[in-house]
View 1 (cartoon, one colour):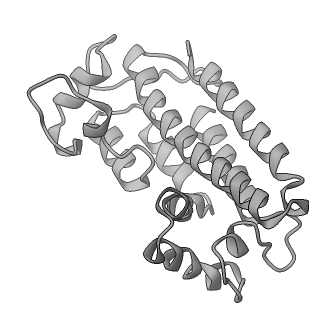
View 2 (cartoon, rainbow, N blue to C red; view 1 turned 90 degrees about the vertical axis):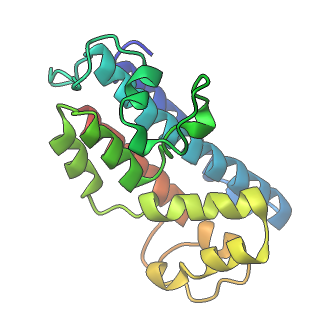
Length: 208
């Protein structure tokens, strides 16, 4: 990953692969469809978290967006991510004296935490990032709920997915996949594919 554009292309290529895999998932047996939905949901959230983390790393290197905007922060050019995060300890999950581990870093996939991190880092394109998150997307609130179900598969996480049903006008949600692989009235694709399209839209906006 050498630039914002390289990051964008890499992320979009993965998203295209996920969306292609989803094309035939509804024709699979329930067990196979569940397995594919789990894989794509978990990997998509991981991909989104990596994009936001690497976006800040691009800013620390002073990379440029597609339109030529210079990404900078309040830190000196070339500051390692760990060093920058240690100077804004309020975004860390803990503040260890030992080398910073990924589990101590901000929860990159959470909208509020990412925005807090880049604001405190003095990101030069923070207005553009805020505008990207202001787009009419739901994945920033709902994708991690679906991921938590597949990661933990318990009554609580399943109920959290079922509770999303009214938001998508999907009223019968027996199994969480009924929502994740279900379709909203008038929509040609499943909810999970809509989330992937929303991720791509935000990625494009942040990278423009």
